[in-house]
Length: 232
Image (tube, rainbow, N blue to C red; front, top):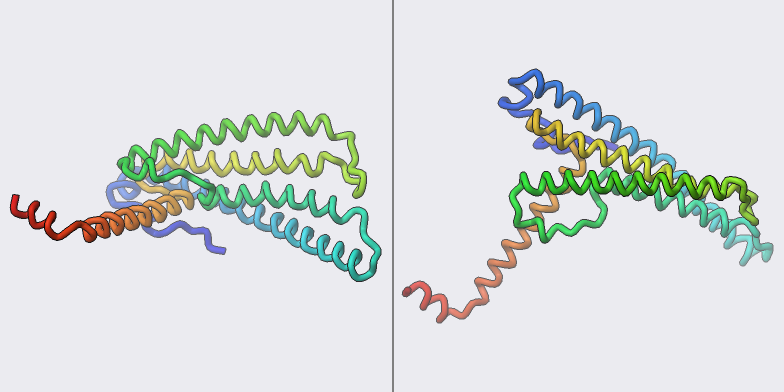
């Protein structure tokens, strides 16, 4: 899967990376950070795919054994539930990598691009802080359940609970890469970010929707009112 951002976000301008060695070094760091993010994305997709396959096979066996063979499995429901926990956390990592988490954009739509850029940077720092706290609390829970065993599968309860820590750490890496890319872009003049590409596409769609709505509103105005305004 090609995770290369659009050329408009990657190609440095002559006044940016082409002129200054610092800009070239910043762009090189951005490329390296992007490769790290791509690596995290590939690994997460692979493990998430295995979790999805495990959940599918487990539930399929549960249906077959319960309704066809009339020999219900006592471990299938619990195993599928644990798999769904891991799948949910890994899916959150993938969504973070692609900038697909739910965001209120209508408020910042009217702000200039530089202001939105720094607002997203501040939001990324807050997300990293929250995820760091989630990692710490997850470790506390792991210390509580590490000696407990699931009744049906016999699995150590640290296995499902560790998904919180693993998923949070991976999301910290994603958002840290995004924050560093935003800082380095001040030197290179280029954003090398999948999240930024998604943001730009979304804002262009919102602007187009807003313009169409305004044109439709103007088109519904009474003709007499428009003639009066033109006469004034």
